Image (cartoon, rainbow, N blue to C red):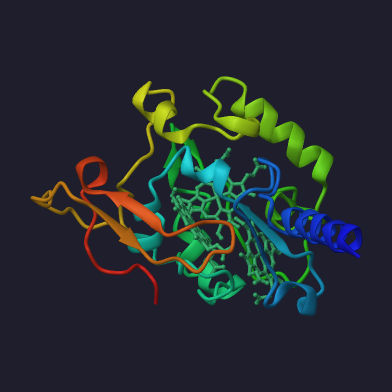
Length: 210
Ligand code: HEC
Ligand code: HEC
Ligand code: HEC
């Protein structure tokens, strides 16, 4: 009896750690958006945090652009993107990043009309390709345990320089006189509460959650 209970304990522990372990680095922070896509007959959209957080601060997206910190809660659609909100705040074919225009998001076509750019967002999940892209991207960056990028170190070593300002979207602010870190409650399953460092980002002290 004792033995059985002990075995049950191990089994439960095993199941729990399976269920609770973090996703592999190339999937960590992925948000799959499908409130309208499948219904409209186009593949769901994958948003990867790792691609974007190397280039922009959390604050820029979650305060200035206004993305909620709960998946599916922002109400992103083809039409909001076309109106230069949400993904379309950057992905409009005109805004530039490092001197190159950022590829555009949704047109008013109801099909993917053969445009390669539509499929950069609307694509079935392909884990092998996503892993290759992550590895190519992370190859030059310092790693923490299990292959995750050590973002703080990458920024300290100036290997990444996330932008905190987007012309036409951000407003010029005077730096806040505060150097305490604050915690922002997040509902993300993949992440504990978010700590925005005032010293580093001079963020505002409201919750970026709508
Ligand atoms: C930068 C990423 C991105 C690109 C590129 C993109 N889309 Fe979208 N699209 C989205 C997002 C995000 C949604 C909302 C996803 C959801 O929740 O279903 C969306 C939704 C849609 C929908 C669903 C219907 C609706 O009204 O929301 C259609 C149809 C669509 N896009 C067409 C296109 C076409 C056609 C292209 C290429 C010309 C394209 N999209 C390129 C991000 C993108
Ligand atoms: C380029 C824009 C962008 C940047 C930069 C960004 N995010 Fe996000 N974040 C998003 C979008 C888009 C969503 C999904 C919103 C939705 O589904 O309505 C999201 C969702 C989230 C969620 C909820 C995820 C879930 O699974 O429910 C958390 C937590 C989050 N972000 C934290 C962060 C943190 C922390 C940083 C900085 C390290 C950051 N984000 C940087 C755009 C961004
Ligand atoms: C603050 C600006 C910004 C916002 C907002 C933003 N992106 Fe991006 N995104 C970029 C930049 C810059 C790149 C790199 C562009 C390049 O490599 O041509 C990028 C790259 C991507 C890529 C990689 C495509 C590839 O083929 O390499 C995808 C997919 C993507 N974004 C989807 C999204 C989706 C979906 C949203 C909205 C939920 C979004 N992005 C919101 C700036 C942004």
